[in-house]
Length: 110
Image (cartoon, rainbow, N blue to C red):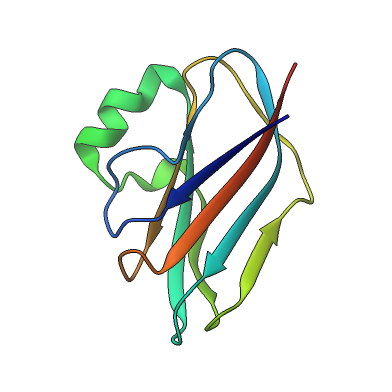
């Protein structure tokens, strides 16, 4: 099992997590570390489409959470379904306010 931490940014850029080998995402924690509610968006992008996605910077076809508002000083846990990722697949997380959301992703190799 591996843990990745990532401060969410306001625009799509660097991925929060890039799969190395086949992995399962067991849980993601989106923690708002500010005193105000913050909107978050989460994308899962297959490796073959990464370059096009980054160039488009907001391609909605890969969005799995849209305008999810996380209350002040609260944590949203994504653990109902496991994401199975192949080598090079990426998870991106953007937030309405820079450095307001801390993303923790737990994965396990398959």
